[in-house]
Amino acid sequence: MKKTLFMIIISTFISANDQIPGPPQSHPILLKNGVIHTISNGVIQGSILFDNGKITHVGEFIAPQVGTEVIDLEGKHVYPGFIAAVSGIGLVEINAVDVTNDHSERGNFNPNVRANVAYNPDSEIIPTTRSNGVLVANVVPASGLVSGQSSIMMMDGWTWENATLSHPSGLHINWPQMGTRARGRFGRSVPIKNQIERRNKSLKALDDIMKESRAYARLRQTKSRSAENYHNEDLRLESMIPYVQGKLPIYVHANEVRQIEAAVHWSKRQDVNIIIVGGKDAWRTTNLLRKNKVPVIYESVTALPNRRYEDYDQAYKGPALLHEAGVQFCIATAGSAGAAYQLRNLPNQAAMAAAYGLPKNEALRSITLSAAEILGIDKQVGSLESGKDATLFISNGDALEIRTNVLQAYIQGRKVDMGDRHKMLFHKYQEKYRQLDILK
Image (cartoon, rainbow, N blue to C red; front, top):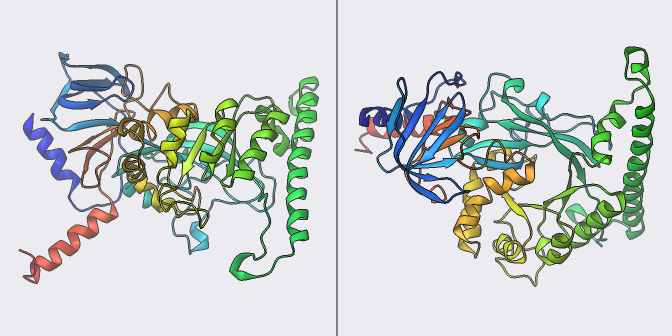
């Protein structure tokens, strides 16, 4: 069994090649003698068994059945796969090259846009992301007032269809700026009157969209959905029905305190369920968020402060303040669409929050089970429990420690190819300096 673990570790650090998605799990796998971070039930010194893509047992001692592949971890750690609550991975390859970006549609109102159909399972960013333990991501469209519906994707699969874990996960609204500025982008002067008019126009548009969508939903209840009536359907309003009926959440991208307050009051008036995305000023509105049970996907722990008078570490300690106030939250990386490459830094964002006051166990939970609960997928992923997906990874140390390496990952029991471009380049130039007698 030691030989098996040795081969896993060695294969992790060989040169990367074209990624081949893992085949379905064909036999039971037992990981024994490990440190099992269940998230939901603490840490267990023991074993975890999974079969047919599902976890079957977690405990101190598990007797393997005939045909089980047994891997002796020799004290290595096992974690549930990290979850990116919002990301543009699979929609963005190179920010500066337009033809590699498929995260936005033209127009201000696109609720019918589906993120998963644009997802590129061959993205070079995916392997580097899962090499840091991020195995599930809520992939989000961007642009416009109503940008579309996000999809929860697994970081392995031949096509977008078999990489989709769940769709839709919610509708995304980019909340308009509530304040005014004397200077706009690049220092250009923007008339305050124009800013106010633009804001009011956007807010009215949101109310009109909800009113029209509710009317359409009532109409659809009285009409047959048969083929002869299909030409009467409006795909955009059709997509709004589960949201105006409160069956699915609306993700409101808002950072500034007035945006957050306005969004929460709007959700109460419209009787819809919202999740705040961004939430940089959420620490200022904790009473409102807690009272109305509004979760926060906190982006950008390592951001600069919003205001000159704020503490330099205000963003760093934001998660700790939300935790102390009893607000439901999880941590995400910066820029849900435009910075997909930053997704690999998700565990580092959680670690920074832990360094600035968030309890260590809560920091780990914020990118696993807490994220799963907010996204509504906690019955499948987010913790290591019997009956949940075997979406997990093995590491050689604390997963929030930057020096730790992820040795092997499994997604729904499928063994994942751990090669990536970063490792390939590392070995390429390591060999270069060996041949030049610079590196011994």
